[in-house]
Structures are given as structure tokens and as C-alpha cells.
Length: 207
Image (cartoon, rainbow, N blue to C red):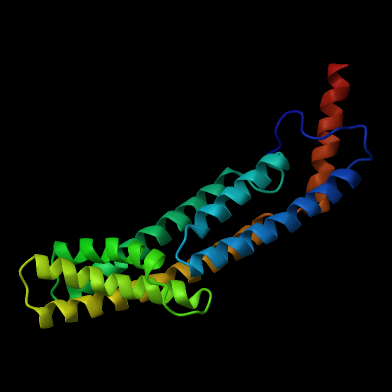
């Protein structure tokens, strides 16, 4: 549904606005690609993509992307974040871990992504650091909780496996969000022309 003061009726109906909307669409595509890349680094790429689509909806006055589309994307982004954050803890619990291990895995993953990027390859180094940090964090947490070294190490391996699974899920969800965003945001010329004509009629009635 179009918003008030949608498009200037001075321009030929739909021509200039349609060109601008395709430009905005191209920019949105680049933002979505950046979001997917950030997901690989386990950074909040889904939220960047959601913000990009929301901004696109704003600058195009809601012609192409509506409330329900944004709501679906919000649910997808939130679900992906929850799955990623809980994956390491579930992996640790599957190996018999406690809250200590789950908490340690969460903290270790964050610190590992910052300080344990030991492989001199972009992206790969960050992922390795996160997995290594998750392993060490879960292991340390279980040691603090009173488990022996061998058991704590097994729980750490389970947490690292879970985190790897969560990272893959987040990447897949980000790719899905990108595809859905690109589909619902297509600036169809017919939509733009109809919105321009509606705005022109509304302005004509007010004068």
C-alpha cells in the first residue's frame, strides 16, 4: 500500500521513479551480499540485510515491500540468531555438558573470533578462531564445574561441532533471507506507475 506524498507527479508517470527504484534495488543487492559475507564471519549479517530492506522500503515509499514482507524477514533473522547462539550449548549438552560448558562455549566463541584467528586466510581464520574458542571455552567451563580433563575435552568437541552446525545454519538462513528480499523487493514498473498515477490524482484533488 502506497504512503502519502508518494511520488512527484511532475515527472512522467513511473519513468524517473522507476529508474531510481532500480538503482535502489541494485544498492540493496550489494547490501544483501555484504550481509551474507558477514554471516560467514558469524557477524550480524542478517540484521544488516533486514535493515537494508527496511531502508529500501522507506525510500521507495512502501510500493514494493510491505509490512508483512518485513515481518517475515524479521522472523527469519531472529530465528537464525537463536539457532546459532544455542547450537554450541546444545552440542555441549549432547555430550553431557552442564550450564558451565554452555556458558563457556558462548563466551569462548566470541573471544576466539577476536583473538584466536591463527590461520592466515581471511574468513577461514575467523571461523577457525570461533570454533577453537568455543572448544576451549566449553572445556574451561566444565573444568570449573568440576569435571575431569578428558570429559571436559569431549564436551568441548561437542560444543565446537554444534557451533559449526549453527554457523552453517546461519549462512543458509542468510542466503534464504537474501533470496526472499530480492524477490519481494523487485521494483516492478507497473507498481511504480500505478503509485505515481495515484499520487498525481491525489494531488490534483487537493488543488
